Amino acid sequence: MNPHVDTEPFFLSFRLAAITTVVLFVFCVPLAWKLSQTRSGYKPLVEAFISMPLVLPPTVLGFYLLIFFSDRSIPGMFLKETLNIELVFSFEGILIASCIYSLPFMLQPLESGMEQVPAKLIEASYTLGKSKLQTLFHVILPNIKPSILTGLIITFAHTVGEFGVVLMVGGSIQGETRVASIAIYELVELLDYRTAHIYSLILIVFSLAVLMVVYVLNHRNRVTG
Amino acid sequence: MFLIIETGSQVEIMLVSSLKKKLAGAEGDFLLHTDVEIARGGITAIAGPSGSGKTTFLRMLSGLTTPDEGLLEVDGEVWFRKEPGKKTVVNLKPQQRKAGVVFQGYALFPHMSVLGNMLYASRDMVLAEKLLHMTGLQQLKHVKPGNLSGGQKQRVALCRALMQQPQLLLLDEPLSALDEAMKSVLQDELINVNRELGVTILIVTHDSSEMYKLCDRVLLFDTGRIITDTSPRELFVERATTQKFAFKGEILEILAVDAVSIAVVAIGNNLVEVVIDSDEKETLKAGDIVIVGTKAFNPTVRKIAAKDFDFSRL
Image (cartoon, rainbow over all chains, first blue to last red; front, side, top):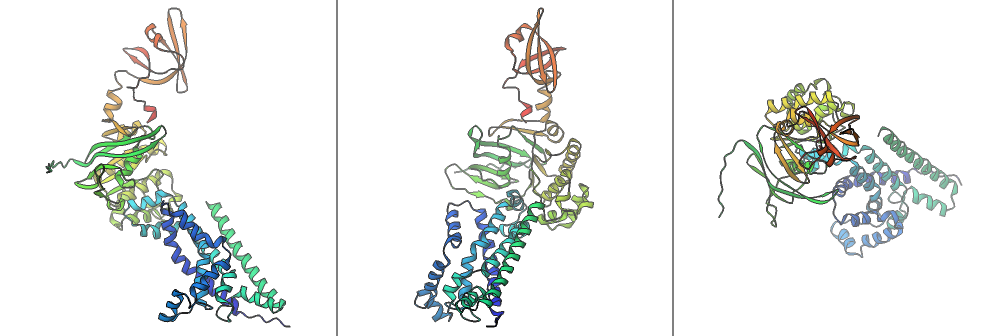
């Protein structure tokens, strides 16, 4: 059997990863800022909740999202009947799932970066009459560029590497939810090992390159201090 | 019924009344409790041992630390007011207070140039140029703080704080990390800023010569209280001139030589032998911390007493 290399699963994977990364960045910047500044007793609870995808099997998250999205649940029914959106087995569905699943990978680098900005810089900004929002954009973000870059790259790469959640929520619909990792699974099931090898090799090279970039950036950041 | 008495005092710029904050110290909790009025246009030193509440006092003025209770009024405007056991009536945010702060360690924004740091405070280009000119920083205005010397960073921090034309300028040990020559130059600049811009300055400092040169008033803090409120001249000269000179030292040994006794005293790195009389000998022993001075040409040695303020702790 000749290998049939189709770029569509990769294109889908990268599209999913890119949109997830952008959505999470916009969502996590204010959340990380809030968490880094608060000393509330709820902080550990919120952090533990957000970090759950790190330890939970993806199938657990996928299972509940599947139930939540299905048109037999109240929210699923609402989405279908009033907004005509169906999330199960759709690109939008796996997008929401991967945003939840990759949330800690964006939040943690941003939050730890923000916590390392000296309190004096923030206080100096306040005494110069600047609001919290102005301080965030003009003082915090420019000073945590390595953390931002780490968050963006790790989130993107982690989303490309997703499998369980996508399979549970999205299944394997060509051009809609069949991302690269799912495609490999299907190829193996079809015993098309040659194509599976090619797909896997592409992902290995991609992952290695991404991690190299992260480590080089981290190292350079440590050296320049 | 409240009777509001209009004092109409244009001389005072700041009124601090029973401003309190509970602090955790090395020797247990203590209460920072301050009552003070500050005259417009002056330079006031805030001195005292570390952990006595000086920095917290400045932070309460700038709004970075919230007092437990009390009243803070600047230029007729209440910045903080809370009566004991009641809700806070007024607590202006740091952003709303016209107080310029120069932090210990400068706190310059590392990603902005000198000019960028200043314009972040206010877009007033005319004022920025004027301040750069006053402090001789024109050549460096496009340089990032990472490439500046300590003295230059200090100037930038000062200029940045002045960009918002504050009523109060609060400086927390601004010159402590600099060498003597640079200190002296910057002290002159501070005096210049005070005179030219008329800004009222409060400065935390440990340096007695700095207090003497810069300040018209010294507030001496000790465990949360202002224990002395006087002029530097009073504090350093008049109080000390009952003796012509005085050094603090430690008695290493007392030797009996014929009829008299000689105390060997370590003052700094020097060993000094001082003849002491029999009365003095009674009260002294090796290991005592003493003051060696002169009175009418005779050296005297006496044990340090609580009434001697320990300048070395400043």
